Length: 445
Image (cartoon, rainbow, N blue to C red):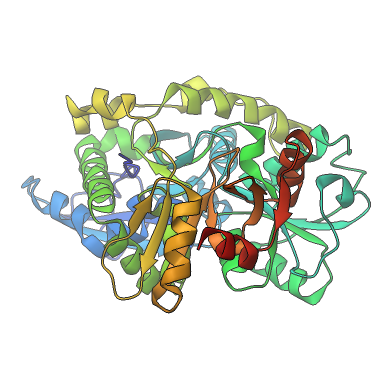
């Protein structure tokens, strides 16, 4: 079972006419300003989905503490502007990826406006939330082929961290071995389509979206790094201390949104799709019952350990100095908000990977024990399939069945996100061979 992260709620002590102040006031109206990233869909339990469900507002209304609460939801494309607004005292609670969270911690300390990591949203213990893609007709087939090429990414993001580490493992200097283009995700996607970038390293949901649209194909699955990556909720320290019950209300609401997503994954995907304009099929790829992301508001030790490992990447890029991760992580609010339920959530493990079909017009998906069984179903119902998903045979990363690289090994049909891992499997298994999707369908039928 997967749980959606509990978003840290920070309270704004300002009159209704004021905005983003951490100062306590006498007004009976309190505005809580929440910064979120609607299209970064692994934060939906602290943003898009939570907002649509109205759970935070309901929790605030149940406080009965003499205040009237108003929630100001502010949507941003990345974590950087959320951090800027938080350190300016204009946002109380924000959600972002792991590398931006570290920058959030560093900037907060530097400016005397400390922030704290109070919960986790979506995570992948192997790193599958980030993917390097190329154009559909690209001849690039491995990380080694990126040497000397133009690669777009957002410097300081988790996707940039994946790019740096992947290049290092491939023996390529991430600073001198490629021409790195520091671009926002949408700009990078346009650059890839225009041919001014040879590859794009980005975070959810851009790789899946571009692949679904036929505008890109995967070159490298971030899960090959086998290093956890996640998104989380950060709150201003002064806000949390001034209004702990409000922050706890936010975290309770996040837990409710997490449970809703787990209990109604298709409906949640449709809701997020409607709010963001993203295809529901792409949202489900990441946030579905067996999606790339797992959701759990608990701050797991392995995620904290990964955060500590990320500091060196940001330091090397001169984006931060040392970051005291232990002082940045503060789980007291989510523990209090969830009570005895917290220990259970902390112990939860990600759902096992599975092949899934989303039939047209269906409110539920159908799971299969093997990719070959899924292909047999798809072959028999080709006009009735909305989307089909299969897990990478080595990393478990879910991908669209018709976008995967398929390998036939005797009677077995094995999907891979990236061509390099498929070739590695073929090299290690005599008789195995790469086949087209059409050939895989035919063999399974």
